[in-house]
Image 1 (spheres, rainbow, N blue to C red):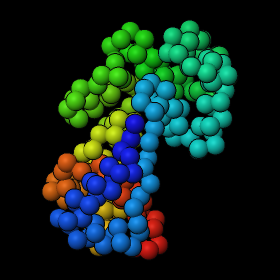
Image 2: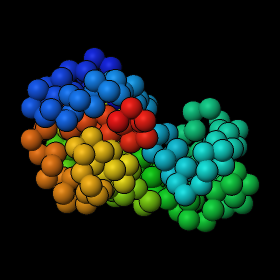
Image 3: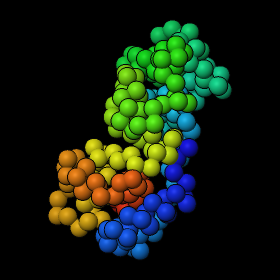
Length: 205
C-alpha cells in the first residue's frame, strides 16, 4: 500500500523544516491526499492497459478484461487467451505483448511482486524487465503500491512543473536538475513527489 496520510504529513514536516518553500506550499495548498494502489500484478496490468489511451477507454478495456478473465484476473488465464479474445477486450497487439510479458514473468515465478528487492534501484531494475514498463511506471508502482518513502520520479513532467512552481523557478527544471534539487530531501522524497502533483494545478500557489 502507498504512503498513508500520517506518513505523508510526517515526511513533509521533516522536509518543510529544511526547505521554507515546501513549508509555504503546505500553508497555501494544504496537505495532499494519499495516492494508494494495491500491490501486485493487477496494478501493473492496469498500468499497461491505461497507457496512451483516455481514462474512459482504459476503464472500458478493464471491465471487458475482467469479464473475460474472471474477477481474480489470474496471469495464467490471460496467457490462455488467444489474440482475438484479447483484441475483443480492446487490447492492441502491442498491449497484448506487454501484458503477456508481465504475465509470463509472474506465472513462472521469475518476478515475485510480494518480495521485490528492498533497494529501490534494484526493485526498479526488476520491474523494467516487463515489456512496456519503463522507469516512470516502475517508480509510480513502488510509490503508490508499496509506499516506498524515497521514490522520486524526476522524469515526470508534472513533478518537474510542480517543483518549479513550489520553488518559484522561472522555467520548468530538467530531470537532472530536479534530481539534484531533491537530494537534501531524502529519505522523504516520495512525500514531496505527491505534494508536487497536489500543487501542480493548484490556484493557491
